[in-house]
Amino acid sequence: MAAPPSGASLALLEKLVAALNAKGLVSETEIAERQAITDRASPEIGARMVARAWTDPDYYALLMKDGKAAAEAMGASMAGAPELGVLENTPKQHHLVVCTLCSCYPRALLGYPPGWYKSFAYRSRAVREPRAVLAEWGTQLPDDVEIRVVDSTADYRWMVLPMRPRGTEGWSAEKLAGIVTRDALVGVAVPQIS
Image (cartoon, rainbow, N blue to C red):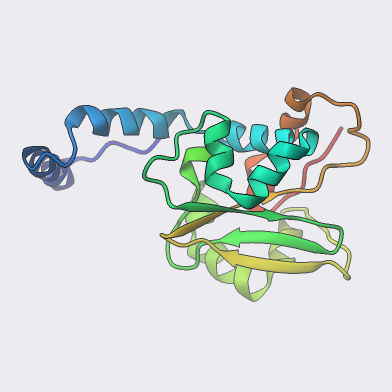
């Protein structure tokens, strides 16, 4: 959860909310509802989407065609959110998501971005030397796997559909969701089974 605003920023926020409310553009109730939705968001939502895609071919097709519609189908509110693209990892291609300008991130599905995702070091190095960054996370990929770095923007957010690990055949969607981490959903890691 983000720290509440304080001092001058709180006063500015209150003025902005009052102006939007006075113009009838948004009410304080709507803002509070949206904040509550954001605060409830967590990587578990994205993990459940991945697990369902691994077990339900119709949902997989929806996820690959329209990420926002797939999120809504799982009960995640995407109202006002940018478009959502889903990048499927394959045996020959691995995706790594970064926002080179700031920290654009699919918060509705993954919660608040971690500090490392927002750091200048990650944002710059992921583009310049993605294989080295992945190795630092313990993610070793074969040399013949292409690493594709994809930039999230204010208009388009990305989530990774990792490959389903071998040995998970017959697992329930709930059990599968348990091995999908936030890090796998942005591509710095891959799902692991113990």
